[in-house]
Image 1 (spheres, protein in one colour):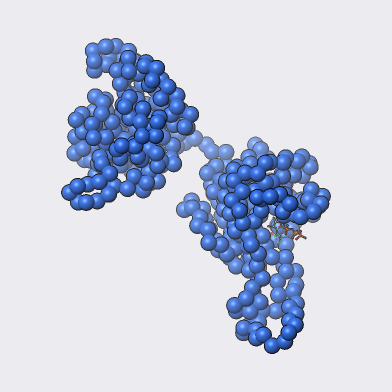
Image 2 (spheres, rainbow, N blue to C red):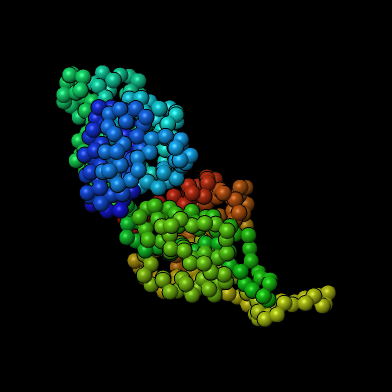
Length: 398
Ligand code: CTP
């Protein structure tokens, strides 16, 4: 079923627009939440009233409602949708989509959409066969859009051939198989640690580091995108996490240890990317320390190495990934950590690499696994680096 799936249906000016009524009815019947956008031409083929009654939502046609003065925010609508389905898609709208034109609400939403896009073309057979349409359709496929090929049969022009919009039942079946697709990490429980930890000296001061948390947040996002159930345990950071991630905010190494320990037994995959402080003040002063003497000594004690601690508890089925940030003897040090902490693989980043590291948006990593297979990757945005790390996880699971 499509229960609670958010479907944005775009309806273009084509005689097949009448099928949008059946399609809407089927979508609503299967439990989907449907919002409809029409092109100005589509209203000549089917009334907005029909579609708003069937979808139980107002139908939107233009950017701006001259009566209420309200702006129909195409970005919000695009982000709302789980799927943007354009059915029927006319040759004109397909051409606009292929070339980035956005002179109406529907085409502007298309440019803003991050969700999967399905296009069900409907037109006369000669329009469908025209080289220009063929090229536009190919272009849309290269953008990652799914084209639902039109069927063969009698057309409104009286001609017979390819061009009829796919039947609503077939479109529904396609959406069903899209949503039921098994993602590679579907059902896997994952923990990701991210960010720095702050170790309190007194009520106002702490020992911390420059970690932004960006790498860990990117890994959490990618794991969730691959179907995993993600718990992100993060130290202090200004980053926002996506709604599909269970976020737990912590401050110190001890707080992080407590949360990792709480969930580790049920975790299939644990990625420890946090830059945990290695030392903490032996005593936390309950009052703000005054600056009396010229010299001030702070006694530090080692924190618990959370990664080594769970490495000891890890079962053969659990995957454990650690990070190593090194300045010298990089591979040698990383391999020592990999073995000492009982990891499946370690992600090495060297501070020698320009553009890589803590605060930036890019990283340059080398993955070393327990068989000492070594893969070095070029400098990439952290979202891409997260994909490489998650691919290694998938390789180990399969
Ligand atoms: N780590 C951890 N708990 C700590 C310290 C580190 O879980 N108290 C984890 C980090 O999240 C990272 C890995 O251990 O995945 C490596 O951390 P790093 O500080 O580079 O290595 P250390 O083992 O602390 O060694 P050193 O600081 O001497 O390089």
